[in-house]
Length: 34
Image (cartoon, rainbow, N blue to C red; front, side, top):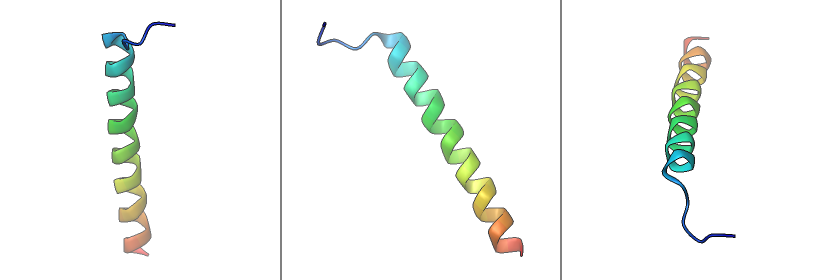
C-alpha cells in the first residue's frame, strides 16, 4: 500500500469536511432558533 495519498482522496476528504461543517452550522442555527 503506497504511503502517498492520491490528490483525489485529499480533495474528497476536504469536500466531505466542508459539507459536514455546513451541516453542523445549519443544525446549530436550527437549535438556536427554537
